[in-house]
Length: 209
Image (cartoon, rainbow, N blue to C red; front, side, top):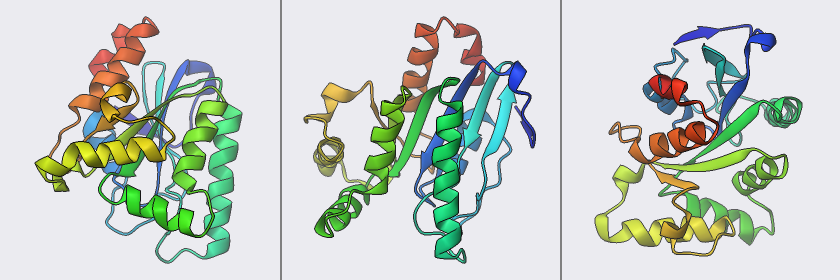
């Protein structure tokens, strides 16, 4: 799949959007999942503007990571978040699928830390926002290779509950995809993406997923 700095809007009928906190593995996931040549780095906040990969009339977009970005001033971080919201609003009609990538093992602690300050975690806000504008949103819980077998289901139940979805998480397998970019385990996410494409009668795009 080729990446492009400019997007020919008249050639795009379907967009899949990847969003998430900085350094949760979005860019690595996108590269491994679609073969897109996106920039990947260990430093949080490497992606500061949307990066695109196009195949046929399908556009894959890697959005800047929200939250902490090393070496990036607070004001710039606010601008990046505002631009992300604006991009989603402006392109909501063609963004058929949104993938919110989270750090699975760290997610409950992150949410609870925000809750303790009486603040809504930005991950939760983004999940609710994308659903409100009509985007079919999948939560990709990354880094699940770090989770012990006996802690796997309880962790996913905790993640599900924090999104306002009643556990057990198995009831939400159409929304929650446990994955490991490091181990190349994307089976759950691939399955959900293909299910969506099939529902859209776009099985022709399976070769790109």
